[in-house]
Length: 234
Length: 178
Image 1 (cartoon, helix red, strand yellow):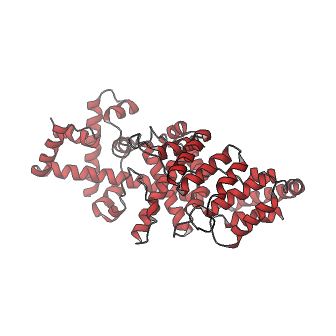
Image 2: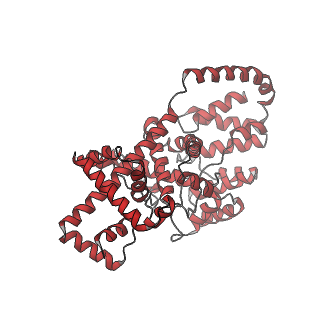
Image 3: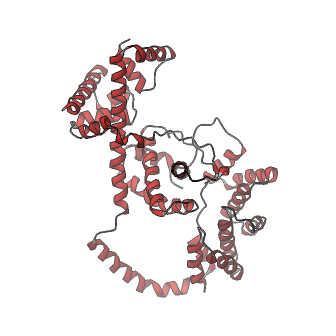
């Protein structure tokens, strides 16, 4: 086989076992071949780095502040919307149902991102797969089972989240209550937050406010959201 | 939840609107999720951008055609992986219970940025003609097979493409020597 074909197959990741042996031996014994491999690897890196840099510039531009003209129109629009909306908003803002819808956001799967093929399937990955796919009845069953078997926090949390997604708020609150609130783990602020939202949905404003006040008091990922929601509730 | 198969197709074609939408739709969620790690906001945005870049790159390489999770989950997984790499570099501790077996096929070339041959190559690539850059990018960056490139760019047969590719490599070499 020609060396060139061998190189193509190497970069296409299509070398057979025999060809791999041949490739390795050429790499060791044929200096010109080794140099060519090295060169093409560098070409690959150079193109990759250029592509990444171009993309990075593009993404950074999304972060840039809007230019003055645009900013001007934005502020004009904001003022109009503000004046027009404020009356309507005053009427609507205190409806707990509305607030729930405004503030509720599905909590993403941050525990077991499932990426590769099927080779490591187990109860945990199945549970998250169903949760990710929006099959909350199934994820509820699976997380409940994991929690019953292992008593782990994440299973309890996502069990409660599945219940929330299914609009079964009383049961969700019961699950959240099983968390030992004294323990400060990564889930605690979110447990309080979603429990508060559940109370809102059930029109139990006082209980929601108590939880939000706890959240607003100290630094945590939900602190600002909690303050914001408290202000609206007052 | 975003419609994964369709999005992946659009990412492959480099559709700007899709890139921007993915970027903006997930940014706040990612920052919220990442706020529990000891990194400041600017650094987290930097990592988030790298994660989006890796997502696009792997989409182009066809590595996530069979994705079993939502794109959001995948993107957050990459981001989390990159946060841990960053923390490691800074010798900060990583919460041990969180080290899930997340596999990311993604070469981190950041060490190579100071390799002199590579710097020359990166400059020379900018002088290359459009067609040459297309062929080399499809082959080396998007990891397409020669057969696929032949169809994509409409070459009459594989040999024409092969000789085109080796001409491009030679041209690049000449640029680097100058």
